[in-house]
Length: 452
Image (tube, one colour):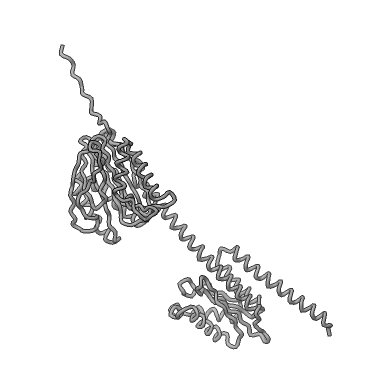
């Protein structure tokens, strides 16, 4: 018989070895948690580590999807015939049966009863895998060995493994979410690139006027639209500059990809319609008829201001489909007026009628097209920029004799100061500035030879 001191030493050695073994097992699981990007590889280790930590016969891990359905592909167990039977039985559970149970506790009780029935006369310890206060799984450790008992240390070890499993599930959910966002970002970047190519990359040269334009989307893809369309695109050179041009400003209700796609669709329709040579009211009427079905399916509407300008006569004809009326700075009168005409939203009514108006622009006059993202820009106090601030700003800038690009820059600068440099616009904001040259050049007269 060994002396008491020797027996105590052997017991301490045994406990020390067990402690080192358990530390190594937990460390290996922690390393796997840090290193694995494949969730299945980590979950395979959970039953194995759990059973070895407490020297049990086997272990089983049951995992649920975030919506509560059983995640059959991730059912994991140690390799024995009893565990194989457990996996077969649990995989046969219907999602309806599990989802019909009210709350995580009811699901846990149902699974505990099923596992106990399958294992029979076996000691089982079970604990939940909890993510953000919601049950994502159940970890079972069992043994039928005589003399086997559950100590408090055993319970803490198994609970620690369950908690590490919860971290792994949460990490995987975050990783999948990040990948979805990356895919969405790539799609948005592609959409923004396509949309940027559809908007004019520079203003055309139109005789006698100075042009500037900019679209600042609130999201990467927006629903604002402006365009410069030659009514006779077959012309070139000087004849093209002197020809009539369509100047358009529109806004699809809403933001993001859906609005951008509809804007792209309408752009193609409108460009085809401009070639017909019809007046502004007829073009809006036909565009409304063509776009009616597509807009009805999307439950969206479009505001659109359509105008055409003849550089030879400085005549601007226009019609409006409920868009923000452009502002015109009259140099001779030193005041700002609104260009408006009655008309409904595009897509609101199948047989909508539009009215055409016209105005002759004088040297020095400035025309400002804009979308509601400009006047609805919100400042620190929650107050909007509103039309009266835009009118005052335009009047002040135009009195200084600034050109079209400078007018555009100063207007956006005032909006940025109103909103705040560190704050994002809540809606797409677009502006187009047209300024008639101060001195309109007339063609030189051809002198006749003096009679001899």
